[in-house]
Length: 383
Image (cartoon, rainbow, N blue to C red):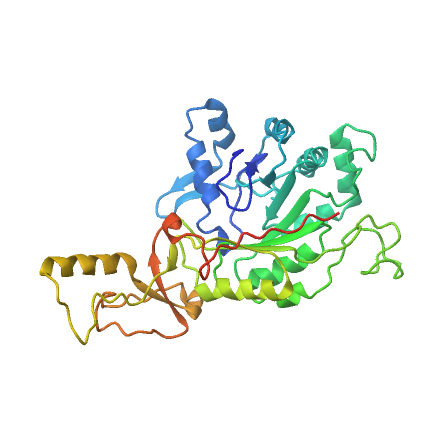
C-alpha cells in the first residue's frame, strides 16, 4: 500500500484486505503473493500481523497463498486522509470480490469511495461473477447506505453506479476474455476497463468494443426506456462499453514473454475503436535486434583484436538471445535459443515474420515503449 505508487496507471494503492487464491494462469507468478509474504516478516508488528498466515513457502513450489483473506477495518479511513485528488488502485494485494471477503466489508469499502468523490478508484478483479452480482444488487446498495452511517441518499448523491469508481477485469488470454468481459459489460459502472497483464496470448476484442453493454442496474426492464431497454427507474445515466485497455508483459522470476504482435494487435484494435490504450511495460522480456553486425561481412574486420572483442561484447549486450514464435504460448511458452551470436554471419536476417527476437532485459531495461513511443492514455472523465 502506497501513497506514491510505482504502478504506471495509478497514483496510489489502498489495500483494505490482504490475501488471495489463484484462479487462472495470470496468477501463476503473482507479485502480490510475494509482497504479502515479505510483509509477514516486517519488523513493524502491525504490518506483520496483517500479513501473518496468508502465505506459506512450499518446497518445490515457492511462496503460495494459503487461501486465507484478511479484512483490515483500520485501513478503511486511509483515503479520507488524502486531501489531494488521486487515482487509487483498490486492493492491489488482494481481490476485493474474493469469496472470503464479506458483503458487509465490501459495502464499507464502497461507502468510503462514495464519501471521497475527489478521488478516482480503480477496482480490478478476477472474480467477475461476484462483482456483477453485488454491484447489480439493490440489497448491496442498501448495505452501502447502512455502512455510511448517513441518511438514505446522502452517500450516493451522485447516483449509482458511483461516478468516481472504475471497474475492470483481468484478461490474460482469449479464454478469460470470453469469460470475464461479458460479465464486466453486465456490471453497472461509469467506466469499465480491461487489464491485459500479464498478457499470455493474442486477444481479439473488437466484438466487445462493438457490443452495447447492459446497464446492470437491477431494475426490471419494461422494454420502453433507454438504449438497453431498462425501466424508467434506472439510475445509470448513460451505459458505457469498454472505456480503457491496459497491456503489459510479466516481470519477475519465471516471467513468461509477451510477443510484440500481441501488444500491437490490442493497440491497433483500440486505436480503430477510439478506446484509450495504456502500454504499461514489456516486463522481464522485451524486443532486441536479431542481428548486430560488427563489420561488413564482405569486407571483414579491420581493427585490432582487442577492438573486435569489445565490438562483439557490445553486440552480445544489445542483441537478441532468443526467438519467440507467436504460437509458442500454446506449447508452454518455449523460446528458441539460436546457436549463433548476434554478430555472427551465420545468424540469418531477418527471422520468420511470426517469430520475435527477444532478450531478457529485466523490467526497467526493457522499458515501456511500443514501436518507438509510450502509450499513456486514460479514459475521459464521464458526467
